[in-house]
Image (cartoon, rainbow, N blue to C red; front, side, top):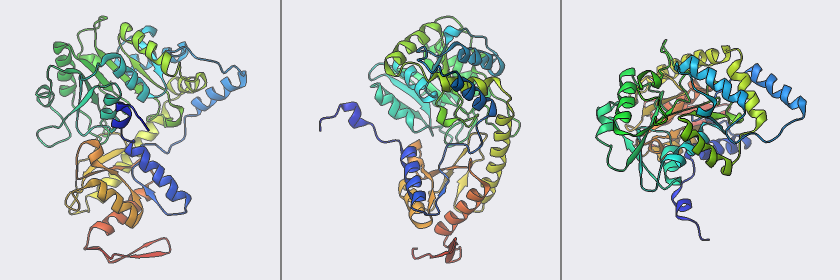
Length: 405
């Protein structure tokens, strides 16, 4: 079979592949514990469900405008005013089928072949592959101090003549690190000075802990003209637990939103009106579900940190937000893919290999599931890896005996 060069260069999403593997094992009846997921288990907000039902009852489920319906744009405008302290017009907003599509369409609108888009490491697994899809090159920027918190110097030294854009994802998937106000200010001003596009991937921006508040990139911008190259991406998937609704958005200059709309119109047309109505309900409705999810996640994080810190060979930094921590297991096994497969095969715990996020020897662990999954999952992992643990382990009624060194 003859495939395009792009098709041959793109690998399967490792997170989706492992999710599928977990689903298959569950269907077989295996007691799999999924510590790799990025999907909150809380219920969809009632306001979203009621808005969906109300629109269904009209029987009018038609095409949407390519850039989204006006009520959805108005909800994004209000949201941007409240959380970003910035008033924008409907022409500054595009609604997409998830934040992922908004990000993809933005890349298609700004990147040419062989141009570079830079992002701090560790990074979301899709950034390099999305760059490949437009013929561009993803360039990771690993903080030189070995932390998960980049400095502007880490960015500056990797910017070259081919650099066109920078993506900042804070709080960060996979590390949970929330970048400092100083860094956000520096990177906004640096991009304006160097005439670079800056994409703020803010999909987790309200899921932050320890009393921290969301940071608005607009607070540090000076250029609000049509020449602005600042793009803010967000959506309802994470903070409202509406992953299956696939509604996200981008806020940018009118000229750029027009270009993104033209691209999206030929790709998918506008997102489902029904799902946009649900998102409007969530954005405009009671916000207690977001607060409840944030508090649950913060408590889950604390439990996971306590259990991980019981590993003598594991190094882990406490996340500031998101659903994830990024733990260094290299003392047990250097190859994170082999380690992830080992944990599935031996104790049926699913984790995400760090190499797919730009750092070998690490595992991404999610705490968006239940407390029992967190505690039992990490206990199983410790039994499999720590040879000082008892030689036997029970999973349900089944007794496992460690037969490896």
